[in-house]
Length: 374
Image (cartoon, rainbow, N blue to C red):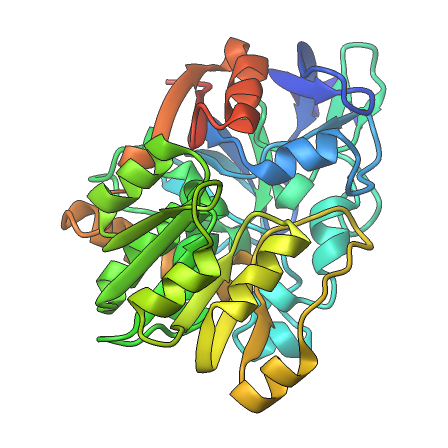
């Protein structure tokens, strides 16, 4: 492939386990087939970016991560039919589109999900990025690798959004916000008048609080250990908050809900917290699990409590969302003032990516968003 097919860009590269991100000159190839080239305006940072940097998930290095990108379509491949240059898009996760889960409207459980989001290459084993020395950089992280000024995505995971919405804000809808809100609306199907508890009041958990309010839950409980997060949870719609360092969340939720919550969400990735979430359910209650611990992590629960209570535990990926449908719905709710996820966001310049990561890990910032381009 000749040099004329490449574009000079800047990318934040992860070169070694646990090492800081380094912003480097790089090159990206032109889009092919059903791909689109997106000029990245802003990208959210997510817990998954950090656990891959730290190699909890075995994405090959060196790599360009980033999977909550929003930007403007700059070029399209010859098979693209639904997107045009100039469209505003939010990039979400990759999926094949033809396996049984995809055909059934559950693309988040695509049989090729891990390969398309964590393999570090496209489905053919190729990369779109090179570093300044011409060496390949592993990319296609969540079918985008948007810690860069430009990203290659596929048409089916680049979601066109209205130009009325602030594009720099929308990237987190592609993963973290979508996960929390979708878990409530799509997976748990929280009902009007019901009780809901979120274990963890980070960006995902608070997105779930917002969605539970939209869904009509009348008792919404947020559990966390950071007072500022609990204060924000009340502002966003929680009816009760519990600091689990100071109080027993299981006992308090059972008291608040007169026996146990109808629905719960676990977003911390801590097995002991998952046990609390199961224990806090009422009869026929369901807990959704979205927190991602290291591979191989196990958890315990009381089998008879689960059995006799008719309780269920549901694993949830990406909020079981169909991005092409769900992301525009969330944008509409935001524009109507009913889903103010902007209150979770703090913006950072691209050059401050390591500070953003540190602030996220310390709990200082709920949802960092990197401003990358105009």
